[in-house]
Image (cartoon, rainbow, N blue to C red; front, side, top):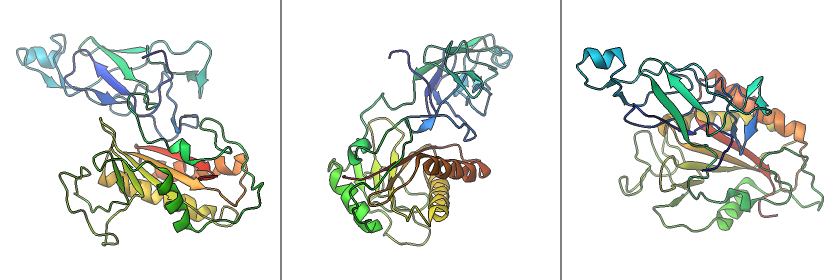
Length: 297
């Protein structure tokens, strides 16, 4: 892995821990990269940004020493990443890079970044292929209905999106599955799944199941962006929260079909910020991507 910027969900390891964990970047972050919160060196708070690494095996850890060398539950005690990018800062602190490290003084552990979290570790469904030239993954820009085409119905947006995605084998991609709380997302462990429309169930449009977790729950949205942006933000925030309760750790992607409509970069930014604001009130710590674009245009 080359030197990369680190984002929400990056895989971390401690040389004295028994399991890896994932970096958490709180939704108060306003800087994004590949649709995820971009990390800085301050994202190192124990049990907030850096989660436990299973059991601690370090003989320097007093709890391990007291237990005669038997590994004890990990309790990270790191305070900052070293050293960050020298010129690129994220909300007042150097951006975190994949070659940065943190020290846990409790057990003299070295915490390292194994993957950036940007998704380069495995092949995911190419959601970008759904979208036309108005889409830019890293920079919001104005979307204008230059061709004067008509806006689609919400159902038509879903059908067009699904038709453009590859018909992957069932073990890799699920189309319009329905689940109730407690169901297993693995189709081999949970068949048949909950019937669509059952009370308390959820139904993502598509679930991408890459070789290593986490899965990606993909939804296509089509709202009137001139008069109904508030309902759009409320719908996405509510769905994201509920799906995170059903499948903790799953990535969520919401693709907003703008075909036949116009929306400025500033309006897009306000929608995204409003969604993150709603989620932060509910202590949502999952990974969510929000993408505007003309599907199939």
